[in-house]
Image (cartoon, rainbow, N blue to C red; front, side):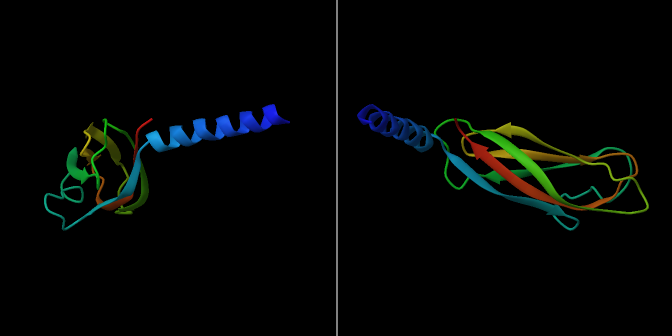
Length: 118
């Protein structure tokens, strides 16, 4: 029984130290017609824009960033085409690239991001 208790305590401290050493931050991103430089709802062909996201607190090392899209508003008369990707990541923030192509008209996009270190 004593060995099991010791093992449980050691396991707890290992898990706790891994959790403490990891850093995590998250937030939302959004862009829409009317924003400065927004062009995803006009013309045809490939169109793109970027969004700069600053972390609330700088990371100790460059984090990994995951993104999701939670809302898309497009013109129903055209196919919905869009791509969202992380271009560059630093300890202070990252750049998000949003693009569409052909005759698609995207009026707004939004989503979440998660930055973390291991």
